[in-house]
Image 1 (cartoon, rainbow, N blue to C red):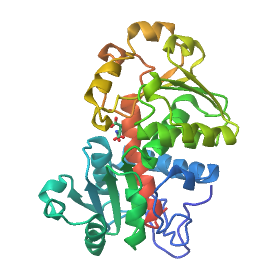
Image 2 (image 1 turned 120 degrees about the vertical axis):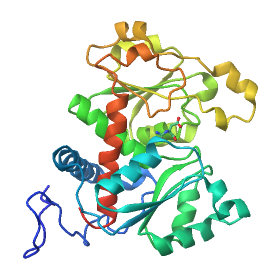
Image 3 (image 1 turned 180 degrees about the horizontal axis):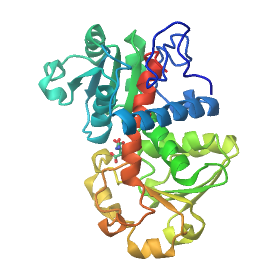
Length: 331
Ligand code: NCD
């Protein structure tokens, strides 16, 4: 991956291995779906993310995106996604316009998404968007002339999360091919598993879907992956697949997406990963969760070296630093 060499003659500190890459494949591009990424793209992005991790460990922050402005537009709650984008931008020397509570913006006056996007792109070089409607990010791209990064469109996709999830699997296990990945919990409404399963389809993996019937992986995603030859098996008991599982990807039941609260009550707490689960798991199994958790992983698991969810959220910042550098032409 010979991508970090700055153009000839450009004075660059030896501590800044990144050059101007206005010709880079991701320069000026929006990131809407994981379907945009080839395996080569993933390797490239992960290479940049590793450089970011090293740079943060070495110097904390550096001015790769000095003078660049990011708009963080969130119509839904967020802790990790929003703050890791802010931190990523800050560590690269850029700044952020944070519209976290759209209630305090002109959205509360009835402004449409296209108008809000047109406004923010006057001030920012790139817009991160989280919205409750599937397809909102694609709609934003229609009117935007600056890159849009989809930070979750309802139950649709969450591509930057899937990239950091995959980066974490590779960091934890050294490789992705050959692994059995079990997704547990709310596979119907959880957008992170919709993106991650599609991304994993590019690798030689086995997928296991453990969920109550009403929360199983949507048929269109199962069909899409089946047509790519991915082995997928649905289960309702974790015990059936735990012994063969290399990565246990746990998700929260998405209370806010249920039409009938009674349905939520029926499935909440259906699965809890605890110390006993870990006793029956492989010695090197990795436990992941996009977080927030609301009881599906007992806190007693946190001290287990196989619990990777805190490392996973740290990786989010490095992967988002890489993506920002890529779309803003600096990686
Ligand atoms: C997830 C999300 O927003 O989809 N959180 C995240 O981005 N880390 C998962 C969730 O809300 O359960």
